[in-house]
Image 1 (cartoon, rainbow, N blue to C red):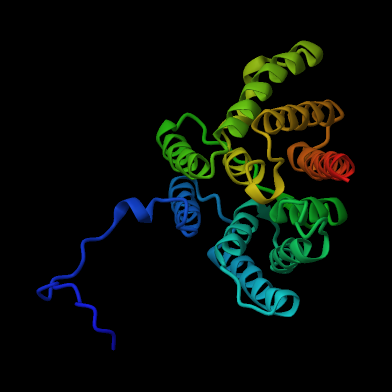
Image 2 (image 1 turned 180 degrees about the horizontal axis):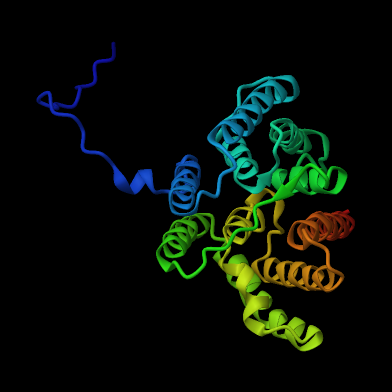
Length: 284
C-alpha cells in the first residue's frame, strides 16, 4: 500500500458519468443504438426474418471475430464491431434457410482479416458478406426491401439514433452528401425512365437504406481520411448506384459501395505512399 491518502466516499457510489458514456471512447454506444433500431423496426414492421436467424448471424460474427483475432493478433478483441456486422446481416439478409445468415456473418468477419492492405481491411464487413452472398446465391438469398410506408415515427427514431452514432465518429458529412446525391440522382433517373420522382426517392425511407447510410458508408475503418474526399467518394457511390439501377440491378447500393469504397482506399494509399517517398527524397 502507498502512503497516499485515499479519497473519502462516505460509502456513497460515485455518480454515473453520462458524458463519458456518450463519449467517443465508449465503443458500445453504436451496438446499443443499432439494437434499439432493430427493436423499433421489428416491433413496428416486423423487419426481421426471425429472431433465431438474427441470433445465428450475431453469434457467428462474434465467435469468428474471437477466433481470428486470437489467431492473427494473439489477443481477444473488442466485439462491438463484430456485433454491428452480425446484427446488420441478421436484419438485411432474407432467406428461408438458416445457413445464409451463418455463412454471411462468417464471410463478413473473415474479410477483415484476409482482405487487408497496409494492415487495414478495405471492405466494410457486412457490405462484403452481403454482396458476395446475393451475387453467388441469388436463388436462395435476398435482402430486406420493405418500406416504412406512411408511418413517420419509426423513421424519425432511427434517423435520430443513427445521427447520434455518426456524429460521434464525425461522419455526418458522408451521410448528408450521400442523401443529397441520391435525391438529385433520383430526379435524373425519373427523367431518364419516366417514372414518378416519388418512386425514385422512396427507397431512402426504407430500413435497408437506414442501415446503409448510417453504418455501411460511414464505417470509419473503411472510409478515406479527408472529409472532402469522403463526400466525393459517396457521390461516386451514388452515381454508380444510379447506373446499376438503370440497368435493373436489384442490389445496386451494396454493389456500388463494394466497387467504389475499396478502390478509393487503395487510391488514397497510393497517394500517401507517393507523398511519403517525395518527403523522404527531399530529406535525403
